[in-house]
Length: 355
Image (cartoon, rainbow, N blue to C red; front, side, top):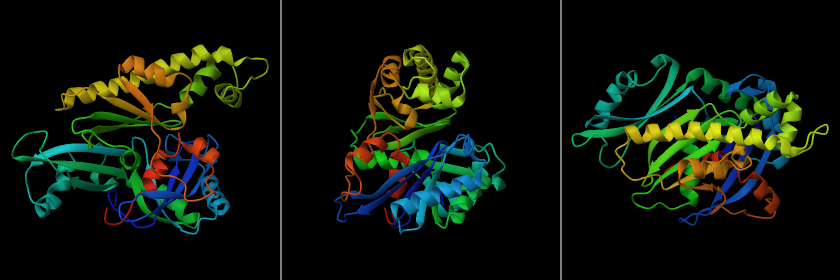
């Protein structure tokens, strides 16, 4: 189930360039959570391309190595899907009971899902509060993911010796991490942008309620591709320069204008998405803040470029702001290293029965 909840799950975020894992301890009585296990392993660029697993054995071995290194005993995991094989829509329907909705949801979904309905796993949730379409209607959150992609991810997790207890959607996990660490104002509009290697997941929240989601094909790979093309370098050399290292006498300063140009391209794509949200939204309030996360969020001057283009405050999302380590095993250095990349894994680890 895309909206299902399970107890004591380990968050396993399988991204295009790395695998991240988080295990949390629930302190109970509303006292929050602590981190008991935290770590990551890199993946080669060929292992997962645009969310599609290309080298399953490599992914399996990476997951196994990570769980063995961290000595994680809990083998039940929650993972997340990204990209265009995942569709999330907020739709308005005439007010009806849950039984009637259950009977009609597949027919309704066919109008919004660009895949054959038999090829997707479908889930839905009735949203509380007034409908965006006015009285006499109700809003429903509709989520669909292609069965073959769910099966691909579940298969590598199973072959790694783990149990894929929940397959979530990355945008929902990101929202979980945000809600565990930040407060909302009643009419505040915020955007969450998770900028990975190949995909950016964008969510818009209005007063703490999700109102818009979209995954777009932009990410850190665009920086590497641009450096490689402009300076005629290999992928590895371009990656080194992107990280600030000198390569064969090419100083890092030569890549700064290239990075700035990609910052503008990424900013333009994010702006297009947010402009489209404004056109279809009933919310009159302006965007109050954008929270940036993901490995590519640390690109030089990206935060400043987004703030200037969008004319709004831009902050880095900290998934550990109110989720501290439980002991010395999770060091301050590891925490700082993984702050930009662990948001989805933290959100997955927060999945609990009865929430």
